[in-house]
Image (cartoon, rainbow, N blue to C red; front, side, top):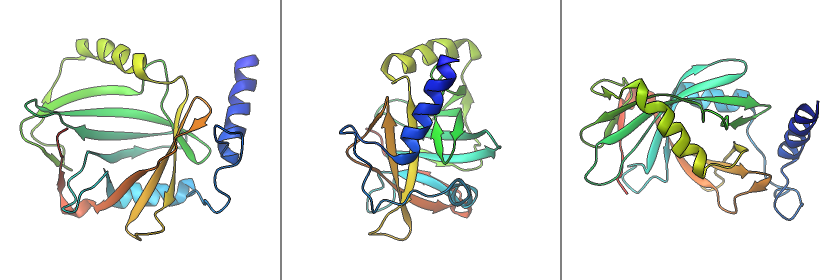
Length: 193
């Protein structure tokens, strides 16, 4: 009963947008509804921290949407290493998406040569399922117990969103900028860090 109560309490705090100071997230902040977000997920890849040429620090495409969760495939890269591609199941909590702590939502991993993320997901080398438990543990070591996201329109760019990150009861001070890349573009460049 207590965990259910705490989940309900957390959801309530998330829905009113409490910040670390206990004050509501900016009053002028309008988070997108689940319907608005899923419309973007259907039409676009999410390109995080895009540069002027719209190469991405990491990118996500949403391959499945259900009443209680979404499944996304994301790509990121580090110089001189293959591009890492992973599939995650992320749970809905109201209009927010939350990463499940225990398994981190990780379902599968691949790697690819080069730094282009094709939306058809071709050309990836599957990593053995035996690697998943160690990767989940690695993710858990640096992850808060509660890790959720909400989205808003970018007031300075109609073709972009902002991702608001909520970790263990605290909103991140900065939002993650997202360029919406139409799925018909077939892919994006990933900018290695």
